[in-house]
Image (cartoon, rainbow, N blue to C red; front, side, top):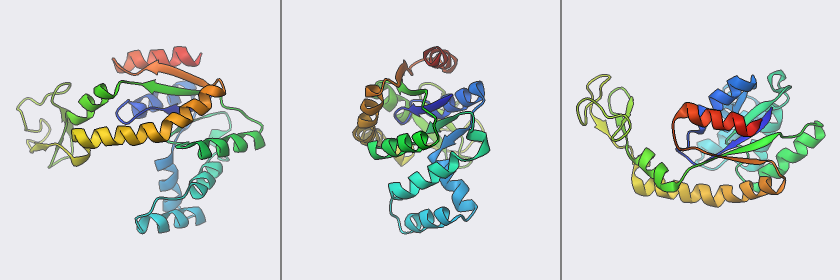
Length: 213
């Protein structure tokens, strides 16, 4: 299975990626993991990426693309992979298509986790984090025993800046601007599968497997 997973922040991509990678016995490849691997290994690409990051700049597509191409040469990706967080734009999607043509392999599917923006805002803006141990809870879905107090260590629960409603709304707008063209790109290629990402985790996993069959 050669699969790309797309979905907005808060859609549950991380959870489903772990499940699907295990189900299909393929590596879960995220851009974050690729960056960490190269930076930790002090590869030439890792050093180049770090120079941009240290300066507070975005890493150019050319560097990200080169890291991705290198990652797909690893033996664990010979029989498939799940890409999470890549491609982020049509240019990256076109680069990936060229890489796969050179390797004489093809994508099987692009799975979109679809969820209404208001549901995401409810999920993310309701999250509370412990100042002491970092554990998280939720004002609706995972209430602490005592309001504002961490069940784990008794520390103070607070709302992180990036969980505030206006920040979440902005992240969703950025996602829509960046990702809608990618979704259209793969829809036109007949690769897009869309599932509803609202509901129980195991139920969503079942929908994902059914869509990919």
